[in-house]
Length: 278
Image 1 (spheres, one colour):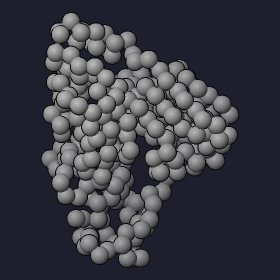
Image 2 (image 1 turned 30 degrees about the vertical axis):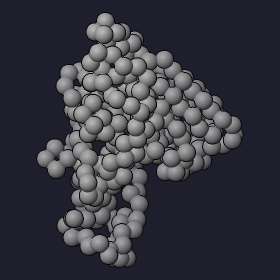
Image 3 (image 1 turned 45 degrees about the vertical axis):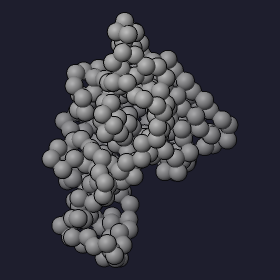
């Protein structure tokens, strides 16, 4: 595999041009040496390094955020469906990052953002307010010690609870989406619990052991039960996937934090329609 493609798979939220720039800067080495983006990796090669932060260039905006929890160290927002977390792909305004910069968080890398939700996924998003908290939260996400719970409405009747353990890789023909793979890729583990079954749909609860881009959506597609309204892995609009619960130990105070929200009105209306199909 080419070196730049390997890093693109490792950092799916980063563009290829940014990866190439990082390679040229020397952010990453192969066997201790700086190599070109087109270098062909071998199984015995040792890749080391870390993607260095790029300064935030987005503009601060006065955008109201639905804050579910806040203290001096962090805040948790309820991100609406349709709102982008970070500028990119031609979107420069109206994002969560713009809103955080408007709150005066420009001193933090990515304005304190430590994880993301897809544009069309609504729900709970943790944001750091201090450098110490951001560093601690980043490590917690790396070790999967923050439990994120999602509700999703999927097509078809899911027979039983299951754990989906299938590697995910960027789609070879469509670079903006992902697919499962038997070889290579990055390991992804999703726990699925059936909450309710309807005539043609199932309400599921998902918890993640890993945090890959589009993980739940890709895994649901792989078991032939795609998320209702998913514009990229199914059809239609109004993606019925929401982050409804967060459980973690506060990285600074050590207190247990449990946050839970009700599904959005759009989610509830869509679910109610499924009742009538029984």
